Image (cartoon, rainbow, N blue to C red; front, side, top):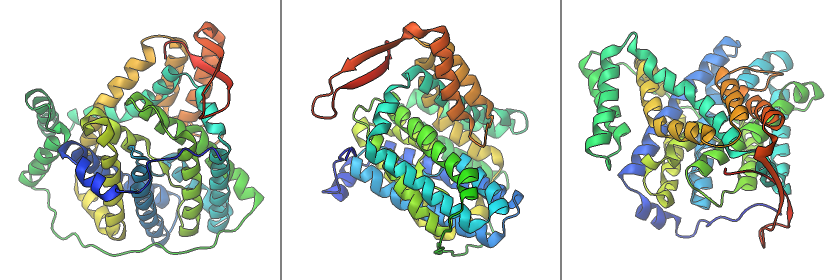
Length: 421
């Protein structure tokens, strides 16, 4: 078995209390709020696809409860900021496939996709695959994905100039004057005050209670080929590499690559019995919780656990939270998410173009930022594929094949590394 061992759950409660501070709490709070707002994307996608409101609410309730529970357990076990949510590209595939092949077969395909990811994690293959992906190219893919959040942060300057200046200005001033205080939290508070002063009406919001419901998946070859296989590719080829690379860029050394892949698979299998399309490591929220703004590196795992707690507690009441987010102007969440990811974006761009693999990195960045889909698979996966191919063609000397002795952790094997990466 190739699954990496974590710290375990011994003393997890005392360690959580010991490691919690204002920075990782603020990072977890901001990432949690951002994660709750993502549910609106799923609701919109489900509505456009013609899914009923009852199915959509069961889907969203399971999303936050199951993701929240795994979001508490996984970072607690590994003591790393492994925030858990689910795949947005997978969600779009999910809503598109249901009207074509049916709900139960799509959930059966979800179960098979999770099984594939679980087996890949247990095989230990993922750790070797990740070594064949140069760091500058992976970071360029992350930079391309995160670029959208940065652009969405500044777009409100066109039609919401005053609140944008107030929130961004607060972030900049706090970053300069009180660098130890979480500037994003200050921007969040000032933004809420502005909303109240400007007359945004939060009254009349009714909270309803919903719980996940059990469903039995069915298996058809059509559903697996149309949805299950692409979802497996997304889980293995996109979600795991994004999460692992974010942790590497944050300075983490012993990252449980195989463990993440296996957990993604196992959690997705569980999800398939509760109307949910996946559970996996969450890129943007992992970026927020692992960033320097979340405090000392060894304490950032607390931020990921806080995200999981927010999801778990909010899940039954998400129907009311939907109405709350609908009342808030769209720019509010966009600005907060952009500010929370600024430093991560800076780091990703810097690593992408500071040394080797520049041609591969620029193609990777552009494809990831474009948001294209080929064969129902999203841009981040294809960005890695085309970026590596471009680099191999134009700059093959930037790759170095060599044997590496990994001692007790793994047997000696061929490794493809990036020079200077």
